[in-house]
Amino acid sequence: MKRVLAMLLILMFAGACLAEATVAPTVEAAVTPTVTPTVTPTPEPTPEPGRLQGIRIGIDPGHQAEGNSAKEAVAPGSKQKKAKVSSGTSGVSTGIPEYITVLEISFKLRDALLAEGAEVVMTRETHDVDISNQERAKLLNEAGCDLALRIHCDGVDSRSVSGIGLFVNESFPISEESRRAAEALLPRMVEATGAKERSVVDSDSYTGNNWSEVPCILVECGFMSNPEEDELLNTPEYQQKLAEGMVEGICDYFGR
Ligand SMILES: [Zn+2]
Image 1 (cartoon, protein in one colour):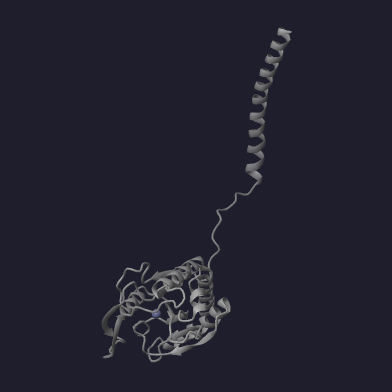
Image 2 (cartoon, rainbow, N blue to C red):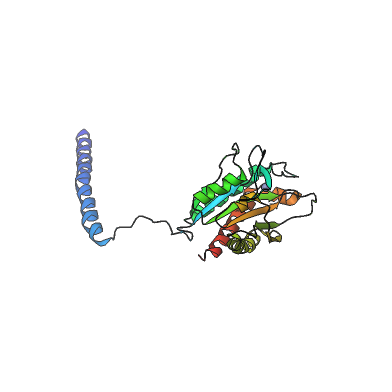
């Protein structure tokens, strides 16, 4: 009996050795010669070329943690002066200040633009800055942006007013192009969000628009004085819709 067991053990050991000896080379033999010549090497996955390749977009998230009431000229050569940065509005329902909401929207816009291959320049990425509206415009001019978007939310005395409105200046070299861009953005933003469509307004009263040398739009994404819209403006889902609507409008404007 012992001898039989011993034989069995020897056989099993031999079998294992045999298995190792035979399996290892056959696997290599099977894989190496057949796979290499017949299978075309898979190319590195290349990202889909975005629709906004070669386009540089400036984003100015409105306001900052602390407003700056020192004055600056509202337009080049103008004697009229306005506060460097106002403190902005805040949510009637959420209590969230505008400077926080608009930076969140701006980050989503930035990411959506980058995903389309655009270059993005931002005037601020934190709240604790002190950059005047004039300085923000100059920063985006110097960066050679093809289009500048100033991201804001609105606030009025009435709680019933809502919707998206875009503002462009009316008597500057870039006014016509700015209006053309705004008219491309507004319907796309409304389509993406389901918000009430207001209008594209011509006004020379915005410092940041007037100092811009590139097409520039002040985007009022909605009213924080309207409780429902205030709540929406502060959800990531609605912020994403706003960003995607803007991207579609930007693609339309550049014919992409
Ligand atoms: Zn604002």
